[in-house]
Image (cartoon, rainbow over all chains, first blue to last red):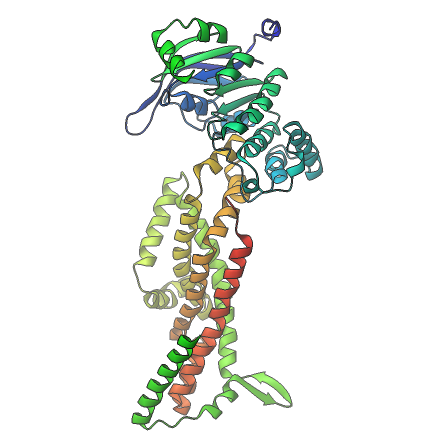
Length: 252
Length: 250
């Protein structure tokens, strides 16, 4: 895995002292600090309720952090709505529940943001969409509606939809957790290809195989804090913390 | 079908019972002239149909306005603007907690003259403000019933709030609210009958005038009810068909 060292070391996401408390007093994320570099694939793991999804959602402003700073590709995520919109245009996101637009066809789902946000013509957008749908292996379903697709197919469309914005970073929020076991691999394969193509990715997942194979860096979280971080081999084979060991023994 | 026929028979029997005790003299043959007349070899609308056309006009204009007011109010209520939420809340409480008749009079006698609205303008304003308040709640319910993930997906793609509403939220919400919205359209058509209170020549006023002129109270009001029914019933059917066609699998 020589390419890891060769990957650029310039930081694309800076997270400094981010905390998030929900109404009702649940502290989801506590004083979280990390740097994510270009072309890095970062996997965030941890038990449910450890704040990993909340942290991920803070990165594109779907959740607003109470304190701390987040800077994405030089743009600070602050009260300025323009900044938030700019960041969202650079950061793609894939959700656990796919969240495709059910009233639009597959092609329209992938075209929409290209036309509205990037102001592309329909022909330009369609060309790009077809290319991406080919890449994720859904090219024969362009005119289907989301409900006519399997979960794995829907998730691959969702990935194509996010990629259509040509994002610099992709966030994945438990992308395979809602899938039947036999569909998990078709989505993971697409994600692996994407990782190998040099996309910067932050992935919340329990898929150990994926983390081992393509991630550069694993962050293990519990109760809103980083328990430990490191290369996947190190975390999985020689976890430094008892909490990590316990969690890994449960999901293996 | 048999039940329906039975029902009609029972109602018919009750009506004939009540009219026979009253010694009512049925004169149905005099009704058609109020629907259509032949004048100079051409068929022209009678008084009732004239009234109906006017009802259509006032309902049509009011519907467009009520839809705009309803949607605007719903969006403001869901917005981040404190003033917007306060004002729309105030509007809803005032309108929904006072009778439409009172609103029609108030707007006709007080607000209309200030704004320079005529009879028609005042009536339209009263109807659309009234129906708009109910429609806004329907719009709001349709919008908030959508899964939060739809908003999040749209936002994560960098779509603005306006684009998200236009391309993602409203197309789905409208499919969901078509049935209750039609209910409001039907109630709007029925409520236009109240504008006869400010002497607008709608179907209800024409019926009242004819009934007073001819003493054919039963025939005129039965005919009028049938005309309203002939308009609103197909509407229900049409929207049901539309609803089926637009249904989205989720």
